[in-house]
Amino acid sequence: MSKPLVVITGAGSGIGAAAARAFSAAGHPLLLLGRRIERLEALGLLNVLCCTADVREGDAVAAAIATAEAVHGPVDCLINNAGVAPLARIEDQNPAEWRDLLDINCLGVMNGMQAVMPGMKERRHGTIINVSSIAGIKSYPYHDAYGASKAYVHALTEAARRSVSGFGVRVMVISPGLTKSEIESTMLNSEAHQIWAERGADIGGGIEAQHVAHAMLFSYQMPQDVIVQELVITPTAQEY
Image (cartoon, rainbow, N blue to C red):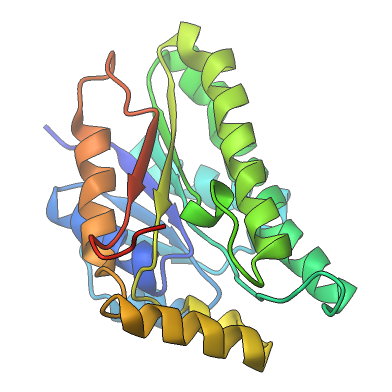
């Protein structure tokens, strides 16, 4: 029996790419969304559709999902992973960076959820995993707008979980601590990047993205009537 479709945003690197490998190894067909289609295709995974649909564009996300569903059947799991981290103090940051950050980290998550939730509710089955950050729970230097965007993801997840739990649909949030990925490439403030890098060096550079991916796969593979509502995963050495 074939396994159901899984959709992963921001799948070209880091946690998204690791999730693609983990869910593919578990036998799921995948729809991978990312900025660089060559990175998605370079993963070399079987039974995969790759698309450069921008998560900020709800219609494009919905169209990509509809195309994948026509091939593989309904989406059973959406992993909202796409995100950026232009760290800075709010008083020093270019407002254009806020808008881009909020569009991707907040509205991008909502666009994905809106595209799959009606079908999941109708089928009374499905799982949404929103990738947040420990910065959405705790405050860190230079994480002003970024931390706020991840707190938004937490609040959105909680609200959505309550609204669809009666339909048998699961909405969960995973909050990684420092994780080895390419997200640092979106950090444009040199002082913020230096502090972030020094902190990372103190705790061994962070956990491997594959461990976050395996935690997501474990949570998804629980019976549908069981939900890991929230999961925080960090390096053991990360004290705060």
